[in-house]
Length: 158
Image (tube, rainbow, N blue to C red; front, side, top):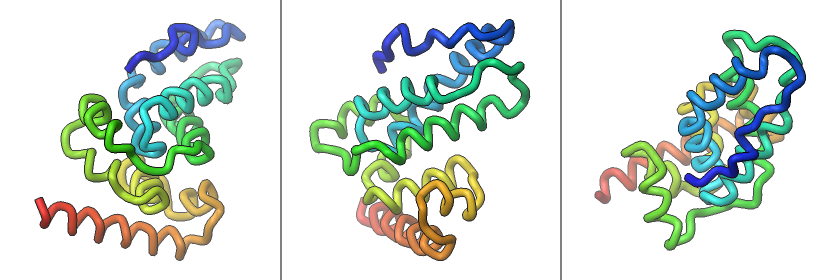
């Protein structure tokens, strides 16, 4: 991952900048993987991560929910991105960027993938996923079932 150096420079609005920076740097790989799983495009994931940094309010003292705040910012940026599916050229690049075992998730269709990542990997409640995606909770449940079925089929085929 080649994140722009300026993207990791957090706004200096208070004395808490160093704490924010430490939390961000400690979780940079995980946040990038989240963006990559949601967008299915390494360059788009990088843009989303950079965009997420600019949406977080750094003026208050960070607390134990800093990572959740950063994950939510990344998720919101990623959901609005144009990345739909992983291109054949992007598969090799993505394999080197993801934890082992996550490539099948990346190859799911967009909406089942986004639902699966937000609900099962990040741990958002079904209602939160529904709000973020602009669908009802039943839609999230259906998309999760589709994702699980596609993952099962991919696993059995390998």
